[in-house]
Image (cartoon, rainbow, N blue to C red; front, side, top):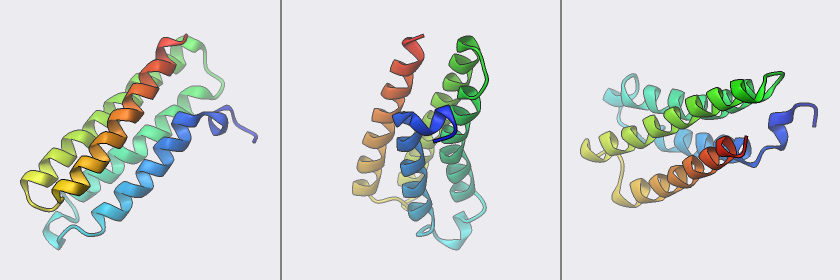
Length: 116
């Protein structure tokens, strides 16, 4: 692979979870299409995008900064999960599964950040 981020497991996991979010938001009702679904998808995409951007041609300090952004975006997705559950557009099972997945991703990103 040509780019450093393509070898990072956290980036691969972020890509996979973004795809899961994409599947989920496609089930949302029309009134959420341009509200919660858009925000949630952009935040999920931002996790992988920040990992990639920070890893390429940057110093360790800069990479750590972008990993922090990635974690913040992942936390934003978790907050969107809560909103979706409250609005009854995300089932309890869907919430629990994605919540656990993003919790694991956040832990992994933080561990990578702490390794520098």
